[in-house]
Image (cartoon, rainbow, N blue to C red; front, top):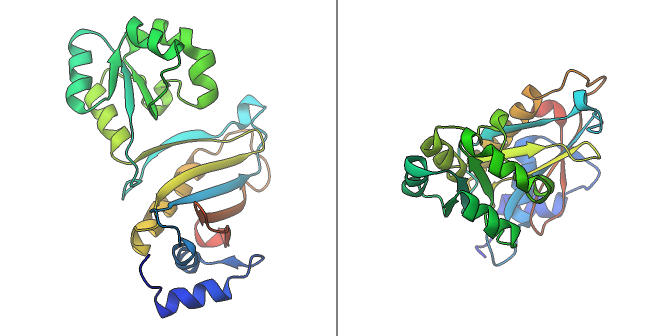
Length: 230
């Protein structure tokens, strides 16, 4: 690991677990605490004032991060004919129709994003119990059921992040790597928070964003001043 700057050393030493920090200061602390030998992922957790068990309070969406995620994304595409060739040319790792369905049913789940052309949803629908719980089910609202396969595959590989509120009303996402510049992480975090705000459901009452924290894979959570990012 590279030596910490004087500013980063102070950030580590002065981190107060109960304090809420401005975004720029919080990112300094997160980067300073990312001390593992690998390039840690910078993550965000947003505690929202919703109950996702109610349909009108579900929070779900997608955002193309301005600086990408730094993560290598494996993409599976359900398509036939020319669209299948298009998916392969765009860089999808797994492409197929019924044959791909059978592979997934047999346990082949080595992909991070699943995309399908509209005509393939009858096949994909048979995988609902497998893909659904993992958040991999293609969805037209998220742009993963589309005839524009090339654009969808490139977006998935270029920094697109899907998000969905868990049962407890918390949204988690990886928004970059600890090696990213502070400015790049700030931009990604602001873009993600903005996307979640736009996804506010009609049934949400009271305070929508209750708490926000950022951290690295192995580092402690750092609480953000909510008003500094919304």
